[in-house]
Length: 404
Image (cartoon, rainbow, N blue to C red; front, side, top):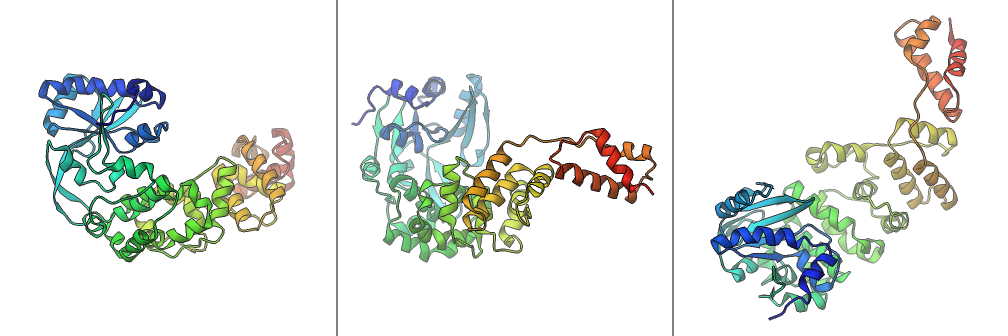
């Protein structure tokens, strides 16, 4: 039986909160309960990587007992996912997902009807890929019912069982295959990709939230800096968003963001949608307001003059301008010299406060209403064009030019 060497020290090194996990298990032991790490953290332990996600745990006790133990131990938790026998522990700044072991009873491609099991092998058989079914107990002992460790080390993204059956059970596995292929192997196996592409219509049956959650992880993967990888993803990304997308120069954008340590899923999605006059129906109906606002925010530049930059900095959020710069530079509409100069200016900008108020104009003799608003805007534009340096007195003097 495999064991992680120097397990506690290794957990501390990769920043895995093993002390909190052991604290939870101590209370579960009163009911002969046992905790197992599963998924990403186990892969991190085996590969020696710092944890890239919050811990996923499974327990061999029923949900009611799990809740009872956490309450007795005075451990904070949220019953998110309770209908799936799952909850989230919040302790010392850590978020820990805990799910009771389950076996599938019925599946429809979107959600599975499950029942509790104490059998680790049965729990493992409902998982998607072999390396996602590696378990590790709180003593560092590894349980590997599907030979996932070997596949992980070989960078082999292998479905547990028949690929067609697994996709039919849960259509999200199509996108998860892409995500884990990029994450683990850095490439996408041709035969399995063909099968996933053949099943692209099944993605429509999934909720937008499930699709967008996987797409975010896919689109932020560093391998998308290679155009050859992007080409392999086109069919399934378009199917997920139910829209034709513009992938031209997308890899350049990904490299550009990486070089400036400013990777953004929202910007990448905005880039792919840049040829659209309006948001695809799926996004418009289902996306959160914050995401839609970012995607719809358009910044116009005639010649990228300093006054244009200043005005947009004053009126818009920085990320809208950075989106514009990076998208235009990726599409060869802005050269490197100008791009770097403007990016530095935008990043260094601190929000300015216009020194004039409406009351100041009223005291000069302007009447409240449209006239005052027009003058206020003219003075504001003048102040911006002068690089925000004009003080209140100077703004008032300039305003006098518009007195009747």
